[in-house]
Image (cartoon, rainbow, N blue to C red; front, side, top):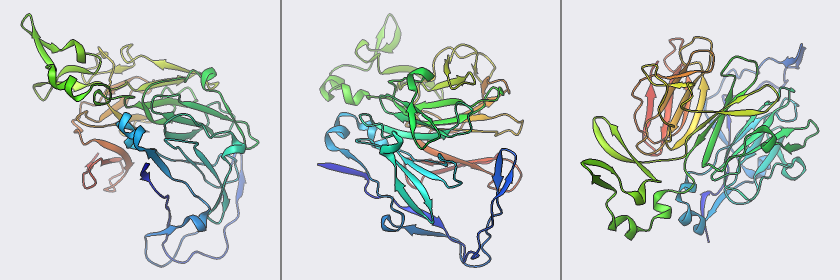
Length: 373
């Protein structure tokens, strides 16, 4: 028996009226090409549902009840990646799947897609795939593919340029067995290549591995020698910390990872406590940031010409905004961004004042947070 997370896929096409009959031609330039957009002159804005029959995209992400019971964190679902992997000027689609093979759909034009997963070699079965990103990690001008998985293994597929990909995860230094959920790429240290930040959740929660009677029969917090601490049975899963002046027992997740690219597509993981991450007072962090990461985005939030980092966290873990000094060293902005259980973010100039604002979507459907810059 299965429980559907996404029983069907809907593609949405923005509609603003009748398009012009002739599509403007592509103009060739050095190292890129461009063309004018066809601007719709009249009609109502909105979206049109594109059916499977119309597009050829037939994808569903379903999770067995057994898997959902054993690993309730899988219920966060999976994302989608969009990118022109074959260089034909059309955006292709990659869908991660929690159980079974992922799917790559090549855009044929006219909103028609073809499943090319097998010939491309990017099915990545045998893992709980949660997210994906297209990015040119080795600087050869072709979009490669990075796939995150809860409990691993994450996968890096290098684009060979002939419609197929090669698994280069181990050689790239990106092997991981953490609870990865999503990833974002940008050049954080201004050396001309794309670096990587992976948001991590947790492979198994305390509720997954500790039976209810085990949790009920032992106090989570005990007092030893006049000091409150987490009971030994729970130390692998919880820590004591201060939040808003109150000491709480917070469940620990897998720490996120920042990877720096050496320019060839090989990555080195950055330590949280090695000086690359500073607290709001400019002091290097004393421990890993091990919150329940769901999403992350690189954007130049403060307009200083380098990419900053916004991280969405689940449960009571607050979101973080890390400000980049231009060299790849990040400082906690110190702003109180709340604990909304953010599942994703979008950045844009919402109020038209010339800077980027943040819109966060939370686990509760009607809980939307907007931070004005």
